[in-house]
Length: 487
Image (cartoon, rainbow, N blue to C red):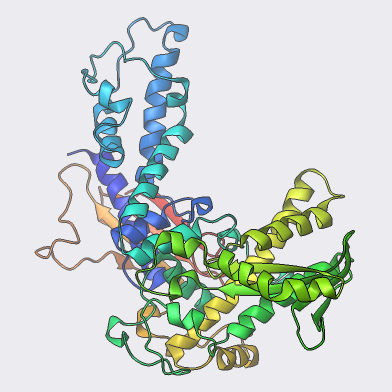
């Protein structure tokens, strides 16, 4: 029995359980695999100890052998845990992963005086962590349902995760209310929004049969799709005006048609631009939609908009530009190109970190505007009301952007303001029965101030939802504390 591996396993389980409490349900292995990926890879940025400690230890071992001669150590010996660390990494990366497969052919016990050849990258913790993340990504790309694969492919599009890296700031329009944020976490990880027993029930707005993952709620035209469109439109309008760029909205071009959600008369040297916003949900067409189909949905809608309005705008003496967005957060090809041009135009006079921050702020505000409304659509589904009613109730709430959570759906119950999850165990013997063992006694790991017997190690995690921020993870405004203690 290895106490170190036991602690790592327990720490990972506690963090996973805590995230499950935040989401309101347990996480499957697939959902946990995505959650522990970095935000830039479409995860939640939740650190799994096993994805941190083993790469760090392996890098330290290789660095020791690399520097042994310069430290005057003639016969460096591998630490006693070297074989265990390699075994753990092999479980993640596969038995044939190099260079571990070659290293394991030799004795890596405490009497080893050399290690097979290695590359400079092998001394880097980042390199080993990257390999583990790649293995996670390969798992996500091949496991789960067809919808899971399409969902994950859409989430990996550029800048789709901007909303997850936000630090809540109401003054900069960078805040998603807690109730919506928790539902967005479930939706993002592919966790059902509704009880599976409700599958096939009718949508309260259009009588179409519902799915439990929220696909219909997000794509239903009667469930606040226009509010979502308007939120993105107003976010862009505010960005232009606040940066001194002349802009108008809902401008009629060519008679009765109104392709200009935003009208930019002097933004480009080539003449006025009619910008048309379109938002599409890639995974609403079918539960069996392929990755290739899902990733080109927005592109196809942008092309359809160009075919419909380009000639009209050209006759009117302006340029038509579609601004396509996926409900998973990414822009279409035309929308992405325009957003890049817009950001360069606005931040062009800035330099250094100020320029990077200003550019990222624009993307974050746009992402939060979009995802806030999607969260509201999901919230409306759980309440059996329309998104417009949900929006009106939110604005009328005396708590301002805070829902009365007592009426929340049973599968999305809110987390208490503070929760402590503790594991008490002795390190002098074998581990206690696993909590997943049906023969094990009921766990007592959830507590609000439990005491531990003398002579034990304590591994604990505390979630503090905070008084104003969103709950829990990656930009959510809460805090998660992990500690170890001896008593």
